[in-house]
Length: 237
Image 1 (cartoon, rainbow, N blue to C red):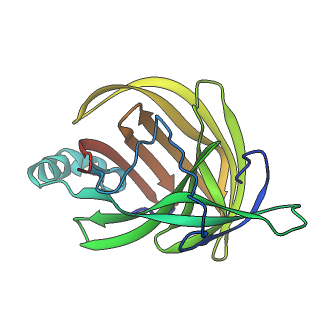
Image 2: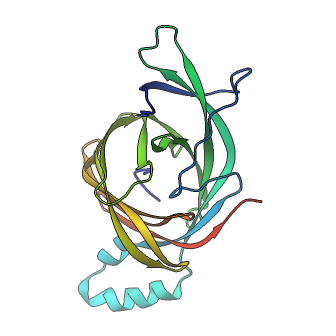
């Protein structure tokens, strides 16, 4: 569905991340983010609006195509937090090779249109939310998708790699109110700026609401133009 499934600086710099079973005698660090609530069993249901399909129609056929699209059941993307996963962070410039463990999460992303389920991994750190992998592909170093307590005017630069594709650009935060099937939400909107995945330009806006998470996302890359809108959010038991 998305062609872009789409470092850590918590008083130190991280140069490596790897899943681990946990460090004996030490409990892993657990951070929280108001705009990205997460826990095992949490589930978000998103309606998919494929802008690409409508744009590909001839002008004379747009109305007919829209009627046909409206009569179809929209596809749904369901994001489920499958389990917690502890990641071992190697600390840069530590002569003793020090590491620390931080709690992350494995997500399953299911698209009802193609019946495919993909895996992603995210990590909540002291300074924000990081994507560790997307569609089963490792992102190195992890990509910070949300700054801690992001607010209007915040921005941060990222530079990572996923397989052979370099991911680089800037995220910029604004504040907006959006209306989606799940309701009306005050949000922090995170937009890409001068962003590329490999040689392709990428434009993404993700709207995050406190205690709910992402309520809307708009992704443009190449010929793809897709919007996700939240229909329902369920917390785990």
